[in-house]
Image 1 (cartoon, rainbow, N blue to C red):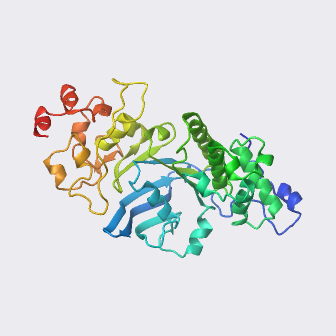
Image 2 (cartoon, rainbow, N blue to C red):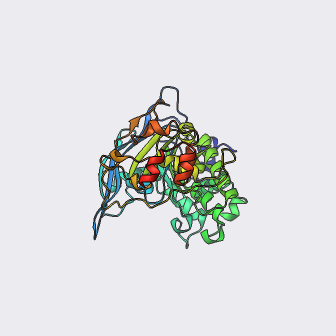
Image 3 (tube, one colour):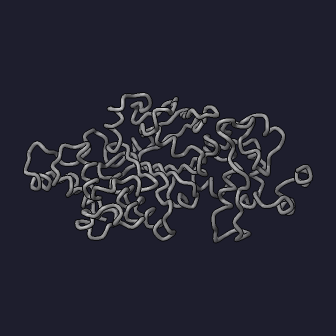
Length: 393
């Protein structure tokens, strides 16, 4: 991959194109290094604490996000996974001020110590797209259909840097080339509908990295793409991470998407984080039945069975959430205590691995957690649950 860092610091190149001394090359304007040093690598870049988001509805307050906390460090990939409606995208959009005015947001979100929530929109705009960029899940609706792709990328540069149209377009072409758009100079003149789904998503990645952000939020970046194109998009994101040195927050409903990319994973359900750990811990030793169910519903080349097992039932209402653990109606390990109290994240048998489940110790004894959502008789035969639990149901 050609070096984006070398090109972005080339003042002569931009000067020759623009011939306007007041214009500046695209470079970082603060003292933060492009690559994290040993002294800064462990310092949180973005810290979210007790984030809550609710929306008014005719039936009452919909609690979309309920006390979510996480942090991401420089050059780290944080995976946030959960089924549709669990609050993943809402929590990300709350950070960037992209929710409608009716949303009620509380908690704290700090980028390099600067509060993001409750600040004037002018302050958020100075960070949005410059320091924190977002790749939206539907590029067809995220890009303006009446402007060329190159023109939209160039505008993203000019929104944050004093630069001529010609210099900004040069930057746009470089970014399209960087993310693998063939014949980038010509394709920059194309409109979004003239791109394939995979190419549109690559263009969205180019738009996200064009200002060399510190954090990239990728919201379902592989949705509606075939498996081959998904792999290409994830490979592009990985290359961009290595090249630009940005942290990535990867939001998805598919654990398979983050399998080879995320350093740490947060599993969300019903607006809360229900499991937190390294990618290896979540995949190899899940301690929350919901995470085990997600694993059982994705294809695997290994294991005792090739049959995919869905999680039966539906997520709970976030307007009138049930008492106790919200996963109880769908959980094969639920006991009476689960119906009364909603557990906080509990420490498990592994370092920095937490699960919001009082039954995590029992789940730890299950040889293959992916089998957890089989029928009652199959669970009894596998020794996963007590026969009395089946007879009671």
